[in-house]
Image (tube, rainbow, N blue to C red; front, side, top):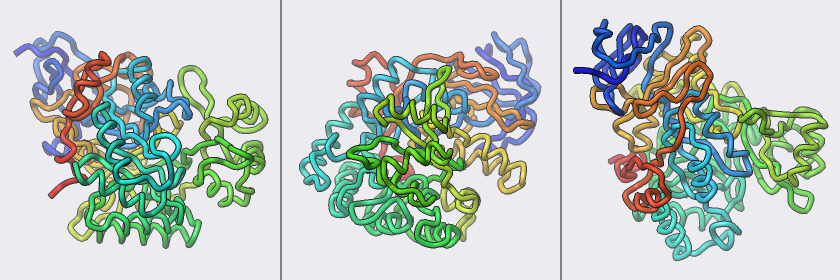
Length: 467
């Protein structure tokens, strides 16, 4: 058989197929053809010598952002450079997600959750069940995978938050909840509330360590409690990130940051939770403004960052170094009594936010022997693929999707990636283009009408709705 592409001599790490050694990977079209040692170079039309790399199933990023507020025009390239093959925008809004998918694609597979936000997609902080069903149905027909509650930033009432989860569960669409409501915030109290609101239902609570920054108790005590709650409540799925910085809004209205999370980050370091307090935090280097430069977003502080923030009417994103080491590490490594990870996946909450460090961070944990290489792959690829319902991803079996992330073991950085059999990243250069939208049968027609290819999933079969 003649293959289209042959990756020669890489160390293949694929726990699904028990691979951890020097092997060749043959690709036929958009599928894996064969993984075997010392394959005949004459069996392929094109050969890449990747003998210095580790090859893992393509990274699946379950939490990123591409909105205009976050400088989303750069997000696809930033994700590709980070070795990501498939990603989910957790909040959209859908129209902005679709626009950038059409115009800024870098060869990735991407899906989207539509945000539930008062004044934008619903009329108030206490939307009715009928209004939420209308939003759900329209979002799914447009091509979204489900809904995202932005409680930590733009909270709804607790009762309305429960209604959103119920409405999503009615038809088994994806549902994610950044913890927090009009009663609680993006902290351990909000996390406890989310667990209570989800009783008897299925829910994805993202970036668990973001609720454990020592705002109410010691960070160590908060993360211990959160992990215990997750272990006891198997109706929940989750992920965590490895970056020190978070991502939030720098937008201010009437002298106050519009995001509750931004206010909390300011208060955590002793700044006034006001527009003036945010300006001082930027000047001092605590708050970092996202600035587009050379096709990517970077963090900037000081007077120049304040000018950029002001020139955009404050409506840009900012980052704070608020994620504690103990919460990041424990979320990454803790297992339950059966030996399964309590938090099954890494996710960066990046994209347009300059914090796409999942591969680099995971490799650091491998180097310090906190994770095995196989465990790293489970959390970067295999488990998030199951969370998304992309069962042809997360492994390199014959017939699986030809999505591969190549890593330099010396630096821990991604050096190449292949998506659907096509090269996307090659030693820092983005060579991919276009976007494939991950959607459901309900949204397929709308996405195709926009001129974009689709990859369909059944949300009812995802890890979220597991038996």
